[in-house]
Length: 68
Image 1 (cartoon, rainbow, N blue to C red):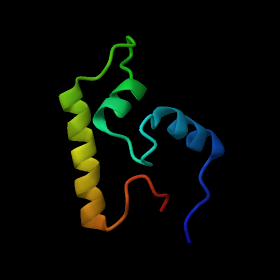
Image 2 (cartoon, helix red, strand yellow):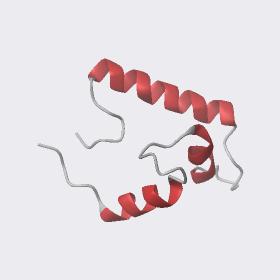
Image 3 (cartoon, rainbow, N blue to C red):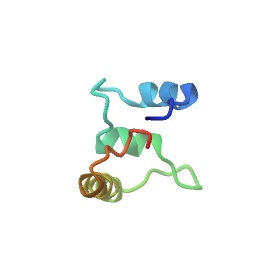
């Protein structure tokens, strides 16, 4: 059985998901994430984060954004 999604996280996700696809693309995630000094992550780093999450979800057969 899946765990309920925290309403605060759901609200944050809805604010960040500008394209309303239910998934974050690299640009949306880059805008949402900030380093300690409030600078943006390099877009290549963000794309690598997404690629890694997708690879891990494929290997575990679980979508990276779904609660376990």
